[in-house]
Image (cartoon, rainbow, N blue to C red; front, top):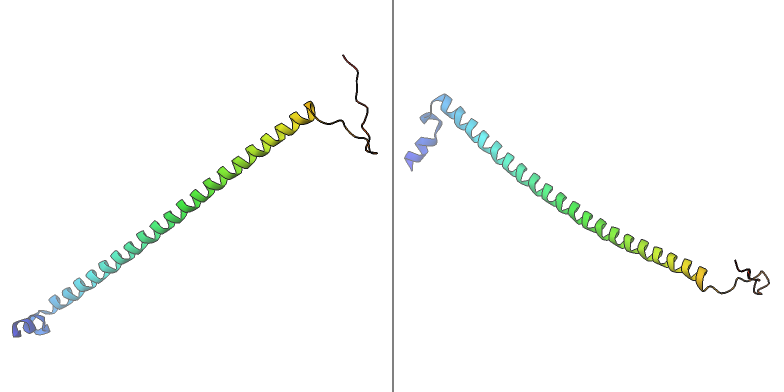
Length: 106
């Protein structure tokens, strides 16, 4: 292992080679940090997109529920309108007696 020690000792490298190795190591560390940052960024984006998709699904469900409620109310309104025109009981006066109906035939 003396050979290994000689390879890594500063005396075995010219001055520029030591700086270059340090520069290379810095570049490798920088690239690794960049990879980690990119990985975290992609993960955050994936989570954000999933949250948006969940929210969109919730809103679609709510929209469907509201449309059904509107249709039910519209149907009820139509039925009430039909009931009041066709088979509604006679209108009552303030004293509770039946109001005279307009019996004129035209």
